[in-house]
Amino acid sequence: MESNANGELYVAIILYESWSSDPSFKPMFEECFVLIRADSDEQALARAEQLSKDKETCYDNVAGQDVRWKLKRIVDVSRALSDTMGDGAELYARHFTNYDAYHAFEPLLGGTLD
Image (cartoon, rainbow, N blue to C red; front, side, top):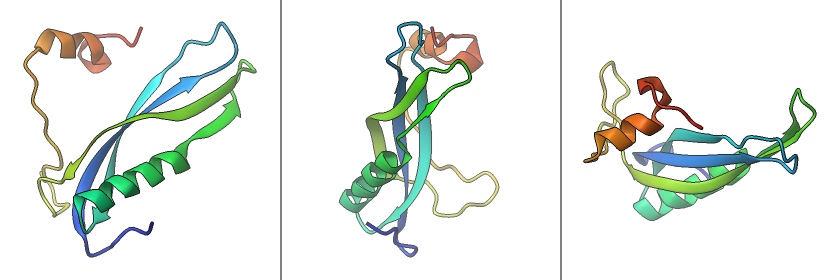
């Protein structure tokens, strides 16, 4: 499915997981925010699914472990809050009620991924 350059702007939040058959491997997760142009919510979701599958990969890391990155989940696909890409444009927002849980998981706030 091709992107529609004239469609509405959407933001997809895509979660990937790494894994390996090596028992000493520590899995990691990657959360990606992807911009998509589409004519409808359904088309945007289909495009997010296609893009996320296209990004799945496998390689050997520096320790010689076979590492696979695979789609874990498409967390959200929603219309961007602004269609302009100017300075200060808001693209996506979400709300939550448990700051402690957010702090515990977000490494940039002092949380850890372990």
